[in-house]
Image 1 (cartoon, each protein chain N blue to C red):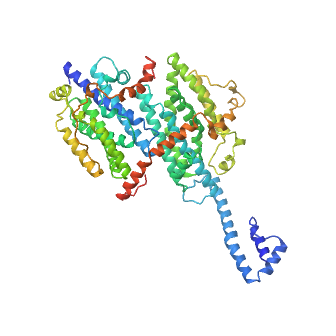
Image 2 (cartoon, rainbow over the protein chains, first blue to last red):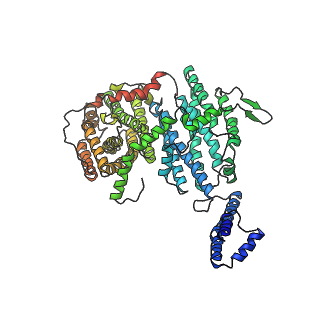
Image 3 (cartoon, each protein chain N blue to C red):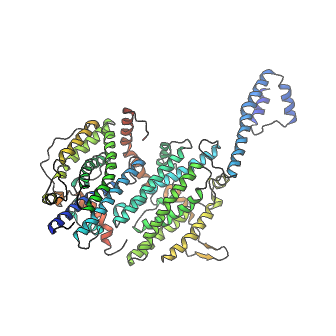
Length: 362
Length: 257
């Protein structure tokens, strides 16, 4: 009898027992008190919960489909929560790590005006990082844990930041291409189903637009500058064009999380669609300032009314993601050093707060 | 306000000092960007650097105007050598660690608040305007550095030790802050820069109060050597800082950025 019972409860995917023989057996068994008790407990807890979850899930999907915004206290499937933590965490890390390649040039900026703009831009990125970490915390995860994952190499960040900044022109090209690509991504994310994320994106996009503008202004200035400056900016475009295209991620068919994220309207457009949009926006901008994009296959397709472009070097893409890019080790090392060198400072602030009963987390 | 040539020269000198202090300290703070102990401090230190370099830009722009030789604030920032820079030795000292950075900043902020407050009543309108705009920012900077000094001093044993160490290292750069030379004497005499006597006492008074609260000790006052940075005498750190700051501008003379 116990075996029959276990067989019944092990068959967890079925909420109701349809098999006639099993029904009969259960009918007989229900006369046995202890079995009755176990069976009802089973129905109540396991089946009941599961039905409840199913109901919640379909209600959740209905809300998503009708364009409702999900807020932190609303019920959400565990997968949705996990996917968002992963995505928003990556986004926060990208801002935080993304400070480094540009911070590399603050002290060398060639004029006070450029220095002020660059400093403000990198400071904005720190602000975005903080804002996104806080938005991620609404999903019940701690910034400390997210940072730990970053430092241990368990969390990803945008692979573009694993490329070095080798000239001042990179400050222009990063603003133009990298922030430009980020805007294409984020404009869509601003309509994503999770409230805190979409609101963060709206705010961040506004600033990114300014970043892109200042970047393009640097690029345009250099492109009409001295022969050396022109060479500097073309070289930078050559180095950053392909990594910028890689920012949109793998092809749709290779993107493991895409389908689920799109069903939940966390993502609203596919990687390839967004990449195409970016190329279409950027090619005329490059032409306007007389710069060449390093892709011999780049050609306007009249039928599609879009630019055809060559294939990304996916080996390079996956290699950089795996940690073998030109600057992966340095970026994580810089983050680790800042974290470790700052430990005594954070401890001091906590100790002071405890002594003086300041109810604030640093 | 119409000025005699010697007063003009003195004012130019004075504006260089104001501008250079802020440019060099802002540069040092900007080195923290991306490397601070917590992301909130990346933002805060970046913001203070931004304020200071913005102030520097305004002071140097006005200095160039007073000089009247067609130079710009960028010419002054990028095409002067070490001995032509008039910033305090204090502000060119390296970051070393967060304790040194905060102590350096606190010493400067208390001083800067005193000077800027004083300058808001300056009869040269441009200078008074710049001073009152800068003062608003400087008050925030002081609040930030003071609050951190309290936390570091009265945090853990380790943080107290590191901060006391920073105080001991940086103390010797504080005396020259209040030296008044011929340039300033002339400006005070002409009523352009208000009287500054008693500033060191006021400064010391603030430092003392904060140090008591922060459980830090004021070092023995053994400050016989007055550095003379206001006349271009610096520590060796400044040259390296300028080499980095000026490399691009100087590598491509005549280029627009």
